[in-house]
Length: 117
Image (tube, rainbow, N blue to C red; front, side):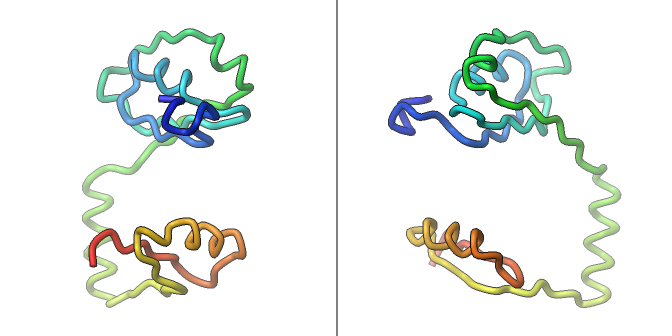
């Protein structure tokens, strides 16, 4: 996977499978990169080679998410209160680098990427 980044590796990988796949994610990591483990579709037991982690001085961060009922309650509250996010800017997918620059400047509200026109 490092080939996709010109040999540099990825700065941030969202790992949703876990298991043996975590090792593949670590081997695709850029120096000082981060793997955020947010899923365990392949199970809770994980074994991986630590050498890629040592070589990149990367970080593995575990993140938990709420349950489905909590999300459903949240969506109902947003709907009933008619809450709408503040959108600072909208970019087309081919303007993604500009959207990232906008994020670096510190937007007032959300930065939206349109995937379809």
